[in-house]
Image 1 (cartoon, rainbow, N blue to C red):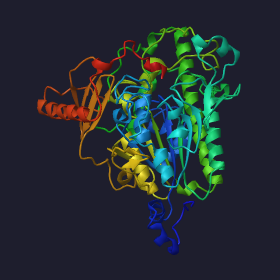
Image 2: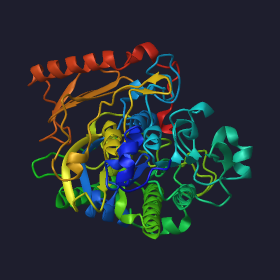
Image 3: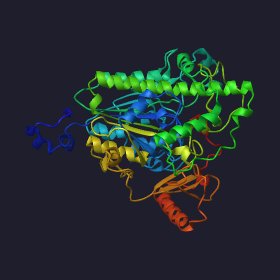
Image 4: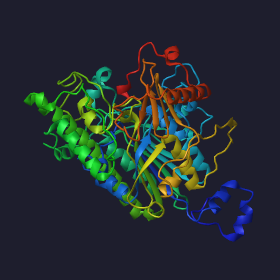
Length: 545
């Protein structure tokens, strides 16, 4: 029987008693379509509505008509973030505590385990059509692909990174240095990107196709996982042209301009600090003319990649209107981690480039100076548990039920998204599924914050993180953090010191002791292993993912 979008007729309610999924449909007047948009390696401040000079009118509009969080956390790097997002579990409990590689421990097997259900599986059982378009990155073997984990239709790439253009013969002849032609999978069948087609556009086209071909008697769930603006820096020439000269001021001036806009927007509160200047970033005024020209081009392309993603969001909104689904759709937006810091061949093109930065065949990325702009006003970058590494912009939009234009503290986490979706979808989360005992969800529904009844997510215990020896705890205003290989804990009062400029661990040893004890207890019960025991002999290049 196909589940209907509206209340079951009274004559069917009794019959539904024998079928829990029908009762779920009967409990809601109209269950929303759900669209979850995830972008890759985008910094906290890279949307206009979060202070950026990058043009993002469609996402800005969703924020103005919906709600934004000042604080929303991911896992600081791609695969662990996606594992938690897709399952609602802490990443180790889902099997991806390190990356999509097997380190020989249950929490580090490198693919989603069967004790963790995906939101595709749960929502499909609840009567939703389930679609994915974009990046997967939670298991490379075909037994772990989206079609095997709850998605009716899927399109995209399985591993952690991809070119945006198929470079054709060049890629084939230089595979060891450049990478294969863009490898894609659609509905379990391998395919390739057509020559000249831009991957962000292809991801969007397939998402729209899935909506067009849906069963309109059922609500749908779309997981739209863009690879933009992850490296390599590639974008359509007409998109790049929009930003010509936009970055001639350099990162120092532009960061100050972003901070000023963030203060106006209420992103940065008057009593809060901002991060201190990154000493590894050179002063713009000290660069030569040639260096400035090269650096400008990098950010012009990066901005174009973000803009093209935003344009795709606009296309999605128009499709919802065309399909008559505009008023009954929940849209959530976030990034999988902060902007990517680090350097490669300072002030020079990387040797892999086979064309101008931005074109098919180029292999550049943002690098630390522009990442420093992207994470404004926060500290540190991707793969770090200071705020710039794992705090993302977060937008929720639902015309019928989310109040317009709210900006809240929030303090949400990706483990909170699954219980939120299941509440709104009236979906049952089982204790057993296909012969496997299913882990309980550790997160909390965001709905009290989204519907305007609360300013922050209410929790009974702190939030915890571990990745490659980096550790963090968040409890109320307090944040405990350490960066591998150091074992020393730092403590910050984020209510006053969002920029993490003052380590107050020496002033509050009681808080350090309490939160660190809670961390170690959490680690023991969540498949976390001492990183030095499982550390790969050759470190996985996280910048390649």
